[in-house]
Image (cartoon, rainbow, N blue to C red; front, top):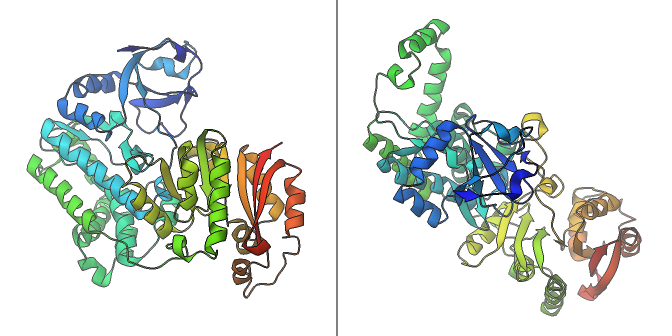
Length: 483
């Protein structure tokens, strides 16, 4: 057991960690801790000595974890726990409603992989929340260590329904119906209910791989369970006498449970997104720049991003990640954000094949970024509450924010300034061909969207360190430092 002395200072409870009463996550600003119950401690001592579990941690499938001894003030909320774990901190917290198809698919496969390795060794996962998975760059890692519990022969996998709602159904809707799951997962943190999935996956879709059993029959069983009267429920409870397994007339063999998991794996492996071209899917070759001007832009970004080491860079409106990779050369991590799901999925699939990638791609509408939400508006954090960048790239985005989303220029600059970071921003004038495209069929109410007015706003909040004209003066790129 590792001895900790620095953590005697204040531990703040993570407001998204409360659903499992056997543990809670705390943060001291530097490290991540988890208070655990006697039951969770007993399970940890057993599973942490198992070779299969050591291998999963060694191969970074499970977040590196250890028990620590630490002095916790008696008035601290963390003092009630019999023991404390320490976890390796992931670079940036993200949520399933920000993940591309490939990311959600790989997170699902990781969950199934952990189960397949655990059950033959006498362990299982008590749940299957997508929030149990986070990312170290483009590698999924399981973070909810107390979710591992002893496997009881004859029991089904209790996390099956949750797995379907948070992984399988969203992937099926995208693959089979081209329905974007992101707004559905953002509006319902518990995932997509079987009844809703069944109403959407109708007709021919019902005969697509995995739909009939996992969606249609699942919804029917849920409907049947909901129609049971209270007397039947009371009878089942009394018969069980507190032991859930005794209320079941049917036992699930280990082979059956593994068969279900392997069937889910086969189904998910076959799910693919329909091939459809998006605006930025081929940005590297289809952008509106002449080659010389694009090279000048890349040189400007690379030069100023490298002026000092950056712990975290945000590339907002990243497209397929050309500038994320340039900025990432001198950074610990780059958070690459774009509203185009196909572009982000393409970036993810490229980066996960790079052994040294330090990029985390996320899908987000920059005019409607992920908010604080969930229980008491604090269970899931807004984008800017999860870590502050030391550099923001905002390239070829401002005209989309001002013209497409009708966000006032001053409001957008205020938001950028609130991040407290250096800023590399590209101003795109109304005369630019891409701005003209956005103005089609719109009333031009953007008289203040000029380079002069932009600089007037910027100079109140930033020092202009460097600037360079692009595309014959239709655009201008700036390196800014907050005053």
